[in-house]
Each structure stands twice: as C-alpha cells, then as structure tokens.
Length: 638
Image (tube, rainbow, N blue to C red; front, side):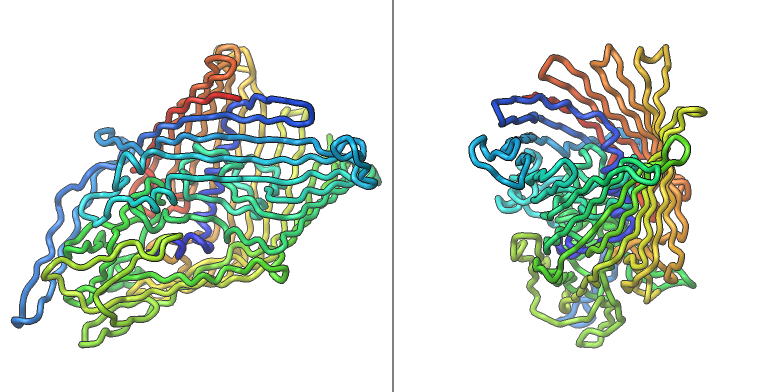
C-alpha cells in the first residue's frame, strides 16, 4: 500500500482520535525547562537531546502454519493451494524479545528577535502604526540512527524487505524541520496580529480536545506512543491570526475576539501517517488492522479475518496490521496470485486563495458563580473528509475469479511499489514457479470538502466546595467522514458523511500527600464522550479495517498525577488511560531528573493493558500490546 494513500488524506476517525489522545497526554508530562541566552533584543532558548528506546512484547512466529503447495494440472500451468500463516507469540507480559526502535539525536532551538519597540523599528525608524513586534522561530532538526544500525529496520523475516537505500534513510530517519516561524505584531494594547507558520490552540481541555482540529497531527515519527510533546506532533499552518481585546461590559470580563485566515495552505486532513502505512521496516508503523482475507462472509460478518498475507515465494505470512506489511503485494486469485497495488490519487486541495480556510473565537468571563470562562468557536476547514474505496467482485482474463478492489487490470508481471518522494520503491519478480496472473489495482480518493465545526470550551473554578478547576470542551460537525461496509464478502467500504459530536469534562486539583512529597500532587481526571447522532449502517474504523466497528456512542477516561520529588529535582507524571467500552487502556510514566543546572535525565514507559489482539478498539490498545516501550533520554539545555 502506498504511503500517501492513507497518509495524505483523512485516515479514519479512530486513528485521528488516537493521535489526539497521544498528543494531549504528552502535554501533561513534564518537559525540560529551556534555558535562555539573551543578547540585547535577541534571545535564543532550547536544548539538545538524545533518546534511546526499546520495545518489548513483539514475540516471534509460533510455527503453527501450513505452507502453500503447488500443483501442475498441465505441463504449462501451475496452481497454488493456499496455506495458513503462522501466528505470533508475544504481548504485554512477554519480555523475551526486545528490539531497538529509537536512537534519536535532536535539537530544539527557538530564537526570538524584538524588532519593534515603542513604534521604533530596530530603534531607528518610526513605524507610525506598529507599536511593538517580535519575530519568533522554532527549529527542530533530528537524526535517528536506527535506520543505519538496522538495515531492514524492524521488518519481519520472509517479508521481502530490502535494505534501506540512502533516499529512504533520508526520508524516514532524518529531519530538517523549521517547525514554526511567525511575526507577532502589536498595533495597540488591544489589537494584535500574528503572521506566519503557527498553531492555533483554543481548547481548554486537558487532553483529547474536540475543538483542536486546525493543526493536523504528524503521526509518522513516534506519534502513536506518547513520548512526544503535543506541539511537536502538530503540523504548523501558514496563516494570519487577528486578536482584539474588548472592554468589560454587562458584568462580563476578559472579553476577546480572535480570528484567522489560512490563505490556501493544506497540511493534512486530520492526521498524517507518511510511510507508517507502507513501510513495514519503520518502527512507527501503526498497529492498525488490515482488511479481511478472501474467504466468504457469514451473516452480517464480513469475510473472515484470516492472518494470511502472501510473500513473493507464494508462502503465507501473517499480515494483520501495518506493523506486518510485506514489501511485495500478492493477492490470492483463485489458485494463483495477482500483484496487488494501491493507487492514491493526489487530489489534495491546491494552495490557492480559492481554497482558503477560516476560524473565529469569541471568549468572555461570564458572571456565573466564581466566573465561568466560555469560548464560542466556529471553523470552516478541509478536515475530517472520508477516503473512498469501492470494491467489486470481478473476474480476471482467463476465467480466474478475483475479489478485486476498485477494478482489475491485467498488466505485465512487473511491479513498482511507491513511497513518498520516490517514484519506484524496488522492482520485484516472483520466485520461480509462483503463478501470477496479473495485477489487481485498488484506487482510492478522498471526498474533500470544507466542513463547518461548532465548538464551546471553557473553565470554571469552584473555590468554595471542591477547590477544583473544571474544564469542558464540546464540538459538533454536520459532516464527519466515516466508512461503511458495502460488500460483506470482500469487506469493501464506501466513504460517507455523518454528524458527529464530542463532549469532554475534566477537573484539575492540587492535593497535598505528606508521605509522597513536600509539594502538592497535581491530579487531572477527564471523561470523553464521542457521539454520532446518525451513523451509517455497518460503519467501520477505516478503509483498511473492515472487521472493526464504529460505536454510535463511545466513552474514554484518563487519570493523571504529577509529582515533584527530591526537592523538585525529580518530576514524575503517571497516566492511566482506559477505553470504557472495549476494556483496554494503557499505563504511561514519564520521569525527568535534573542532574545539574543544564543536564536532565529521563525514563519514560508505555505499557498497554486490558484485552488484547482484537484490532477493533478505536485507540489500538489491544494491538499495541506488542508495542510496549521503554525510553531513556539525556538532555542538555542551552
């Protein structure tokens, strides 16, 4: 499956939800305080860091499969009788197999230049209308040595993956990222404007925001295990943002209007996955289920979810998720094989003024109780659009039945497998004696449209009874992209629109626990409800997972605790996240110890818990029990 096929468009609601969970939980974790170097009007702050991470629970092949056998009805024909791939051992409690997945060296550099002060540019020229201005940038380059140390990455044996070439290493393990840059322009004390590549965060929720949809999430670099800060995962968008502070009126306070204009800078539909759906060598391939096998359906159950993929020797391999993607794509075609190729047309909205996006927020402190802070949000953006994949049962030339996706075309037995930035991945040819009849093409497209999003978010501090800061965040959109099964035999899906809503309720409270720390423990609890007023029949999480399901009403909960121990030198954050419907979740722990003024050491852990191996829960926890991680960090502040 080509990388941009699923990466450039809206992958699915549940994957976007997952990345939002991961990104938001990361914001709760302690991060290194950045030192600052100041020289006149210029200042720079940041850090250098090394990260080494290992994964456990991946296991190994159980060896209980059966091989494919070949017969020769005539001297010139070969027919394959499909075997069954071996299953895999492993899971949350399997510590027998460890794998290096990260050896990343990164920099975080943030310069700031105060260019205008008191209407004077560089202290010399009168700007007349611009009272104050700053230019800010965020540069975040990194290099990960895993691709160099492990020439086939984390790919399983017998999956036909070649060694990385230099282009692929550059794409997946090097990044030269000018992550953010903008000018902050203050015209008066009440009116300001920010111009450049930036993020818009209007939600008051602690995690899993409903209203935070403007900046897509980049899940292609460690995005599915929460060791990245949320601001590092978001893709920044070039925009012009306006801010105007209104006077107090009608017993309200802190009145503010904000609006932004994105003049045609499409950066992604909801979540960008890059090669994590195409390259099984990459450690950040998502553990999202691939579609069903080619057996028939029973009742309302789509084609049985066998664990068969086919390598280029014609032998069955387990290919239940993108973690097990094979380099060569063969499809079982009635006694023989077809090359399987997924084509994702690049139909993203062009960067033109006609494709502009807009958003606005009105905020106020309302005279209710101790003061109810409320923000009303409206967005008009290219987001949450479904990816279409129409499936039809057809027949290949020669009378061989093919459960083909999007149409079948008989071409020469040569195949090019694409990844971003490279026209051809590598040319493959079947092993001698493996019958290949043609090529099955699956053509995808995204149903892009600008959708309206309506949000309400805010906080309330109850200081009389509970001493808790309550947070709420809600979102409604009449057009949210989903997929539904249109062919129970093949598991084919159709892109559709549905109404969607999300409500979040959270509370923050500092609590003093004498035996734990001399400082307060900061507790956060949050409940998330996702609701589809009308859900199309047989709705599934994505085009690739026709065995899953989308719940009409879903619930999610997390509880976190932040502690400052050893006179504040050790900051530890522990999070319990739980999917209330599917009984799966995770335990996460982030720990940072300040060894000296400029050196910090960290240990982070992610451990999936609950039911396993189901591939149907929206947060992938049941599949992530093979991707438990332990990470060590060493940080040097500037």
